[in-house]
Image 1 (cartoon, helix red, strand yellow):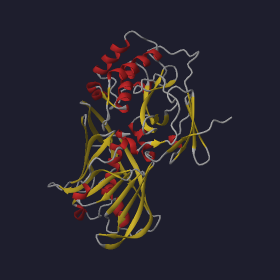
Image 2 (cartoon, rainbow, N blue to C red):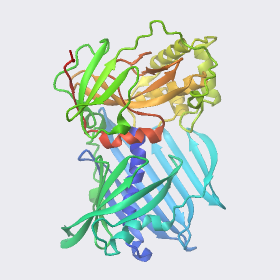
Image 3 (tube, helix red, strand yellow):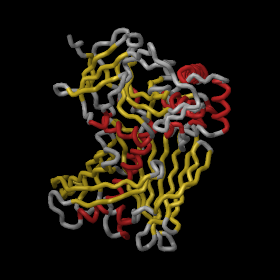
Image 4 (cartoon, one colour):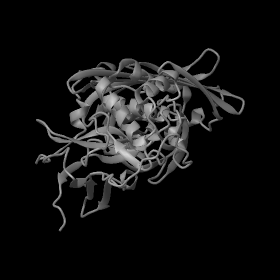
Length: 477
């Protein structure tokens, strides 16, 4: 969840800049925004546009999150600079994410027909070349073009933006949903309600834009609100937002025997769509009356014969490759995996050995990080995100295909409920869910999978964070 927040912040801040006046000269300067999550102040952002001495134009976005995770104060700082030629062609993109574990940087530069992207994650540098993005300076002011074109309800405009953390150029469309009168700086003014959709991300935002092009407010995925504020008010935060509690789905009646039961049937209400529905051996999710019915079952491995490594099934081998956040080919990761598994070749036993090691050797602590496996191995601390990332990296280094899973898990205690959580799926001849945080070689029935895959796929659950209601459902006879 916290890794996806970083990317959503970049998206949210960009929306505010896109609503700037169409006249570039009048765009120069800074605007301050307060950032709110689930109606609680969580940070602030300052957006700026500068014309450089050589005539190029730099659009900057600077966001700071100040949140609490289980009573522990956390800071995350995200910056981005996009530079364009005087004619509007993209020249470069610089992004930086600073969190308690360190700094991750991304620098992309247009050269000829390509974008050369240098990423430094966990101290590991990686260079890749992508096709030259379609993005131009005009994509940063398309909302202004729409608003200043005397639009009608239903008028729309398209845009694209290259996101270095995703390594993708994402397309979107903004559409006028309606107009209303609002007070702005003491004067009643026409305000346009604009809906922006990015289909690949499954993300919608609602912007309220004054007729002069000033964005008054952005509501991103129903989770993050960015509101135009004076600088002193925007920066007045105070760590009051505990994202662990505010994003959970609390239950009125505690779940009995959650870790050992053989099955669980739940009613889930909220803005779930088909992209959040997964059905496999362990869970099924089906539509009900005004809800979705989740049914979880305990794994039954009776009669199952695990495969041996090395695994040669071409269908699952893509999940054995290293990525920029799961550096399973790094010598330190490879050496640690070999140390843990020794000469073991049974895939199921290897998975158990790795899960046990991660659980036994990591110190559990909550932290807002853009997590990667190298930093986790170096520090051996973190929450479910760090446990799962390190486990997945070790599994891939041991030749076990594995992937990230995000969703909910039941936690008992003084505030019982389903909390957002990460774990892993591992191929041992079939896919199984493994939760190294709870030291579960086979994840229990309270794990509700809502996303599966890399950081881009996990971001798709952001629109439902803090908006789900869950209760145990009667067992059908």
